[in-house]
Image 1 (tube, rainbow, N blue to C red):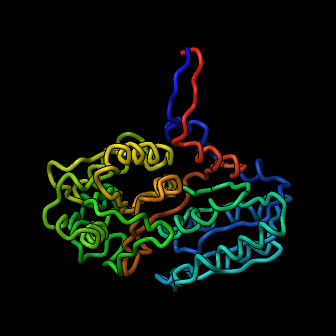
Image 2 (cartoon, helix red, strand yellow):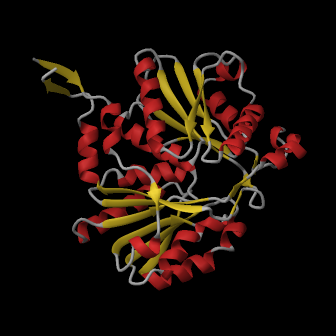
Length: 370
């Protein structure tokens, strides 16, 4: 006896690669890649993986590119000499892109298309350690169009601010919008040009990945639907990060997040691991299947790097979903993160096969012997 079943997103999640520890000296010894991609930021960990690659014997890359931000320029410039020195060690050449320019996505696609044309099965490394949500989603949108070997690498910070001690000592510093905290103000709300979604006359539903500066989330909600900023209801689904920490610090950090954001009572709230991109995909697809017929789904993408990677893959499969960002006027470079605890990797290998799995979602399959 056979059964006909529709292939769902959850059916292929186990086929996607897991995140694993990265040891550059062991795993990238004498390896040759075509492109290394990263961002220049003010956090120390923007240098961790490039400098580890520079120390790795025999590792070579034809070209390295780094993205420059329009915020905190002077803070970011402090790390540029060490970053470019690392590039000179392992890359044949390197260049930079201004990632906040209007034609950034076009220039990036042109560059990547030349790489694909001039190399058979090109191999890319994308270091997402200090990528903003907007930058990470834009780059992933371009990479998902290509048939490449992709290794995503990530430097996990040793300390994330606010620590529980900092918050307990001066809670108003992190709760009151006018105070600096990890960032100050909202520059502007940006509907993602890479994930615009499809127009629907249905009411809006917002999936809000929370951050430690709630005014950015509120600005996105107001921009999408002003009535929801006045009277939040079940059309806002709040996502609280379940951090990659030992149990005691994890509880304290989640409590801080809830206190800082002051989620209205009665609103649906879920915890999603900040370190497992597949769990973000799974929850987003559950929300999608429950609500897409009745609502236009919008994502406020202000979560962790791995949550954002999950958003990128989810939206590749569900292009009718819209994504929004809210950029701060300024980041607090002195109290954002410190050091690097561990380095990690996700090895997608053959993107053509990965996209082939995505394309099967929604198709029918015959299961024999049921």
